[in-house]
Amino acid sequence: MYDFITIGSATQDVFVQSDVASIVSVSQISKKSEFMSFPYGAKTEIADFSKNLGGGAVNTATNFANLGCKTSTIIKLGNDEFNSIIKLKLAQSGVDIMNIIDSKKHLTGFSIILVSFQGDRTVLAHRGANAHVLEREVNFNALKNSRWVYVSPLSGESNKILDKISKFCQENKINLAINAGTTALKKGAKYFSKILKTAQIVVMNKEEATLVTKIQIRQDTKETKYSKENVHPDIVEMLKILRGNTDAIVVITDGKNGVYCYDGKKIYLCPIYPATVVSTLGAGDAFSSTFCATMDKFEWDIEKALLYASINSASVCTHFGAQEGFLTFSEIEKKLEKAPEFKVKTLCV
Image 1 (cartoon, helix red, strand yellow):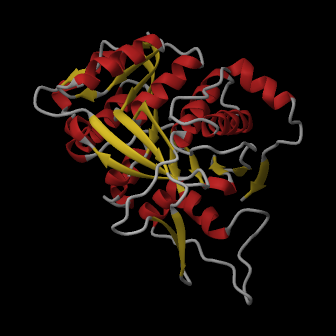
Image 2 (image 1 turned 90 degrees about the horizontal axis):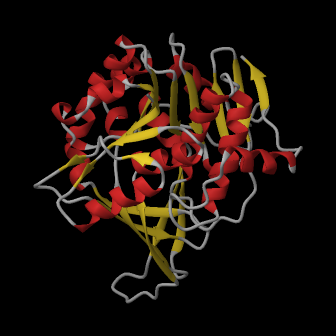
């Protein structure tokens, strides 16, 4: 019996840091956008460079295993040298690799991560085999032998299996956690609401929440201040729409502004745990998987789950690589004991 099975992507990641990258901000009444830019047509010096494994399913499976959970993963790897590298790394991390799918005609997913001087990143991604997971290739017997199924973002054809997996989990009383991806969210609120009804935990970032709810976060102006007890009213509306009439715990991550969670009665606001940011890649995966593992281990204690997840996510941000810096439960607890001021705020709605 597994504690968690993750489903989603696996990639070979190449990190590139250049201190000449510029961050360009464009503001409008309804939104603010930021872009990373480089001198056009120029040869740009690289300040740092590294290679690591990544992908939502790989990152979360590795973290679940590091937290002491019996874990397997369902990913699709290509017919190339990265196939054996990823399998070996997962096995060394304590992840069962028996449910991995091999492709004979696709390459393994590959990403180039451009890291800014601020530590944030822009990802150039080639989906490869990740976009071609078919229903007939998924080991549903393995899913039936797991207490939790964690679905990370699915792309391309692979997104078609989300309906089947969510229905299977509901019919077999398997806990389902979903880290929604843009492919599923672009299908709209009506489609995604059906998925929500089958899930116990749903996590997405603010941009993804905007995509599915069609709510843009309004900026404060001289005439109007939208902030209310540290939770923007548009965020409140997003959380209510996403949860709807389901029993799911809904989580929206908002970068440096922290994380919002809604259980149908209270909204929880968790700040980010302070850290020296090297790269934010993998921080979301670390947060969502730690949140799920903590909820499972500590009897659905939302506040503890938010604090633990924030600490583990911050630790990942201090390293290059989406799987570097993972903490165990005992290591997280020690950090929390040293930061008694680090707490979750709640708001009844």
